[in-house]
Length: 131
Image (cartoon, helix red, strand yellow):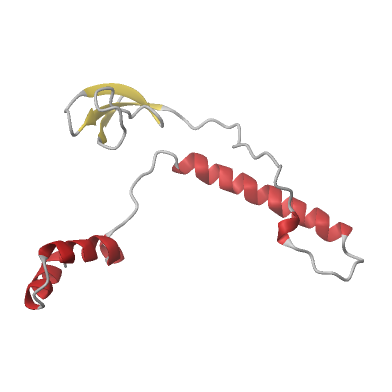
């Protein structure tokens, strides 16, 4: 698909840089979400927020049942504190490798995939799961 885009760019006398930017920005069919280190935590937090809003909505609906005015979703107070569920995810020991500096280390998943040399998780891969 990318080759087709570059051929089209050449035929239209467009630069390869333009074709690459178009491919990276607009061709969603060739991309898929693989991993984000905070996905599970944010997902659980969003579910908890949704649960609080649903309970508040039901409570308001019962309270306002006799009133004729419509119930608005913005009636949920902004000062509600949302915390993630207390259930801890199962942690597994994994051998990690940084693809940039090639260093390897043992760590726990989730959370142990930060390279101490590069100081980031962006180049980390899991080599193997340990017992």
